[in-house]
Image (cartoon, rainbow, N blue to C red):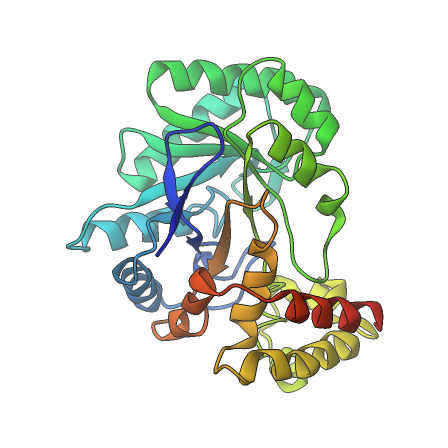
Length: 318
């Protein structure tokens, strides 16, 4: 699988990475419903065997569970250890309710918690998950830079930042990467964020390139109706009408592009997100063994100009 340097960092990462949000399971505010840890571990091993060399998680995914499962999967894995990326800023209390903090002391506590759960001495890429509270961005980035100098963090990055927020952090210390949402249905970063990152050598790792499952080609109205009550997607406007009907029609139209060369809709969606030169890599969420087969082809898929134009026409048509 091809690799690219992540911005100004020393991390040479594959163009696809394993997304560990869903393996945090359910029973929390942004959960994905019940999840079997053995399925999660098998999915991680399958992705690593296929050549993926990084895993993206966060402390808040499953309220610590995702990091713990990642650690268990790596302890049981016989191959080379991948890079592990995680995040701070979203915390939880004894009632499992999430709150936000970017205070220096809170970040220090989060780093120690993630190191403990991941059973690691250093985190390869540590990211501010959300720029909330906005007023504390400078305090948080100053602390992350100090923790990087201490050796606990190899590289530091951000997620969900605007250009104005990137500039504020950049004035304190270099930013290795930005992690924004990006897919056919969410294109806001094209206007300003991607050009800024390219001009400033900030790596871009996009999340939700398949729109949290909508663009895989496997999503149906029946599957959505059968989602468990603690699946966060039930509150996602893209999974609600009238958007759901529009999105499923888009996928049906995409099948013509995907199926003729034997590709999946998910691979086409990921390749579309990777087509922009400012994008370094894409996160693909996997929950069970066997799912990797439907996305791995995106790593080497180059959409033709005609295919991109076809997709643009479909999107323009609504």
